[in-house]
Image 1 (spheres, rainbow, N blue to C red):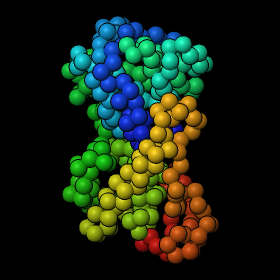
Image 2 (image 1 turned 180 degrees about the horizontal axis):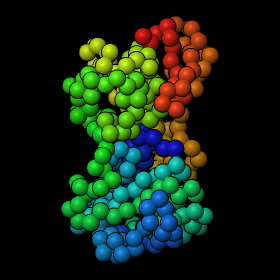
Image 3 (image 1 turned 45 degrees about the horizontal axis):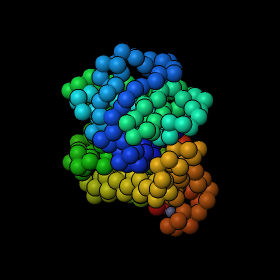
Image 4 (image 1 turned 135 degrees about the vertical axis):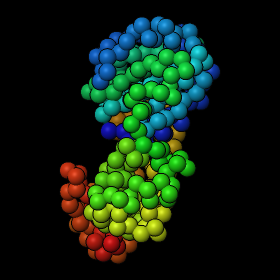
Length: 274
Ligand SMILES: [Zn+2]
């Protein structure tokens, strides 16, 4: 499943290729995705409009149009958003095709159909309903020490669960939560309110560092956006603890422990993480 760094890498790869091009037509091959596609929305707000840029909110990619409408795309479990020459064969499980003025096609393909493609009418993206309950962006300045202090000081939940709560901060999935806690030397099971100010600062810094490293890795691995989307799976960050049960800790050499917290696999070094 694509996580925030993968989605951000895709956004960065596609933006220069899409910006300023016009959408000449939209072909809808499947309506039943996670949320049903509404063809009328595309006719009214998307066809014949130019793309002005791509942004990201959590794991949603937002394609902005010159009429101030937007197309909001979620890749779900297996979604791919790829550019093709118009002459290239349409692959199985392709659900929607944007025909562009540069003779390319942006195609959304998703075998498992947990993804979605929706239209936000002009001037409505700021109040798009699916964004209503999303927490702050981890790479933005809103995710900072003061904010996390407020979110942790009265919380009796494990710090890892706070970090993974999308209502607090979006896009820190299980892998990145495990890694961030390792780099901040905090035991994932610690009660959130027991963290010192120093630890909260370190945690915020580590989370940003881990996500940025993954984006950087994606940016270098996926230097060609077309190859990027043709490849199965996503790049693998060099992981310090995640998936490394019983292997030696990179800092102290003691074995990494595995436990389950909130139903998710949790990896940590009991010697380094207090
Ligand atoms: Zn260690």
